[in-house]
Each structure stands twice: as structure tokens, then as C-alpha cells.
Length: 162
Image (cartoon, rainbow, N blue to C red):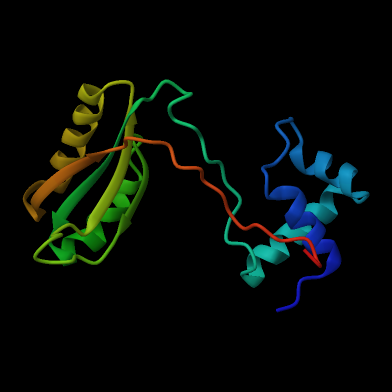
């Protein structure tokens, strides 16, 4: 699919993050010489066509005071993981949750849920709530604590000719 010059300009304007103002789409529109409704319509069309997947936030949990960040990993019976995964993902303590294939015998885990806290004890309390919800469907678990912040970025377009 070809991206129009206008859509390329919009994507480029968004790729470093939306303006931190009350009306970010209006600010983008002003910078691009168009209207807020045009910006929103074009972003919607780009999303519907699959050019962009989503627009979301990528917080720095450390700057928010959450220095204990743990990816909880669970070995959950496959049939139960399909049912319980959305319940885990909907928990207030979980920032993202997903299913992945196991890599036995090295990696038995198929359900992943990220939790954040100010201390490891706080993260362990949140992990215990997940374990309670999983119940007997869970055959094993572990937690992988973050040791560094990785820069999160999305799509980056190069300038034409560059």
C-alpha cells in the first residue's frame, strides 16, 4: 500500500509522540495546516488499513515511582489460559497480558502478565492476586524483574531520499 504525502507527514509528526496538551490532535492539525477532524479521520483510516496498529502511551514506570517491575509468567493449562487470560488482562494491577507458545523443556510458560510496583513486595502481592485467580489451572509460575529501561518506539519513517 502506498502512503500519501499527507499521511507520511502525519505519521512523521506523530512518531516522536503526541503533543502533551489538552487537545493533541488539534495541535497536530495546526502544525500540519489542516483541521482536527481531518487528522482524526486520517489516523482512523491508517489504523483501519493496517498501516498503523494503535496509538497509545508508553509510560516510564521508573519516573512514576514504580521501580519494581515484573513480568509474571505462568504455566496454565491451554484451555484454561484462553478463558483466564482476558480476566488477568482486565485486572487493575496488570498493564498488559498475553499468551505465547511454550518452548519446552526449557520454557514451560504460556501466559504472561506485567505488573509494576514501588517495591518487590508490592509486586509479589499483585502476583499473589493473579495466582488466586488462576487457581488449580496454574501448574507453575515465575517472575522476571526488569533490570533496565529499554527505549520503546514505534514506526519510524525515513525522509524520502535519506
